[in-house]
Length: 333
Ligand SMILES: O=C(O)CCC(=O)C(=O)O
Ligand SMILES: [Fe+2]
Image 1 (cartoon, helix red, strand yellow):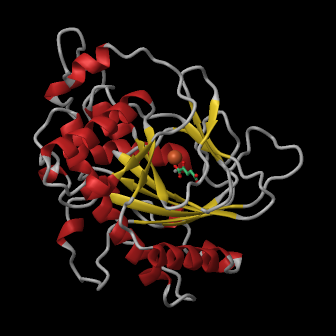
Image 2 (cartoon, rainbow, N blue to C red; image 1 turned 30 degrees about the vertical axis):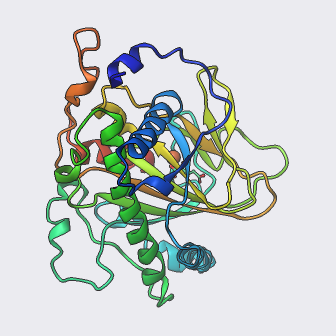
């Protein structure tokens, strides 16, 4: 079945859990195995917009080191974190405090603090060609001077996650009836933003307008999310408007389709609403990587996703313009 045939046959059943996709065959030489994997990805992207991936290949110690570094960062005094405030750096890099962001326009501020950074070589370069095309999103990363290994600890995980993201694009391409390398020349410059997040526990009565992160969709192509083990917080909205829990599953990441890929696929892939509430009583940390296309790519509908019966649904914008507009709305500047 072509991608559009499958899209027009969708029954819109409300999902009750997120599928788990095993990436063990991602490098398989066997076309049948790769096709089966691409079909599983297509089903998940059309029906849910979210899935877990296992056998992703990122070593546990890399994750643990980034996690430990983020705990140290958020334990710094407020003055040290405020010195890196996201509103004083171009290109939305740096720290945002508790309730400084608001992902749900009907909310009153997200109950988390975060720290954002984008592409940077592990060995810094005076002029990084990969950053020369960032346009509206241009701006260097900032790092806490108090923690000498923080930069390396989180950037090491960043590079692993970016490499994993690059391996997912051929699967998305195959799922969309495109040649496997369709996205290669649109993802040369790794427009990928990582955010380390800290959610204080919310106990007792909770104002629904002030939750960990309010209901939202993500803005890039897809997100690869690491969640703190053992703490349920993430919830995903299904077609019946029910919140479905997406608990951490050991050895997996959550992957979700975001707005760029949904717009690019003319709505064939779903960018699904989600939120997080930490009612566990303990601190919670999570680390999303938002993987976009190069910021100068125009999000024109992919040809396999358009037909007379399914005309283009979205205005064409560049990826950078789209992300910047959403960041401005969320951080209020
Ligand atoms: O922390 C989480 O589980 C979700 C974070 C999230 O949705 C986001 O940062 O966009
Ligand atoms: Fe999100």
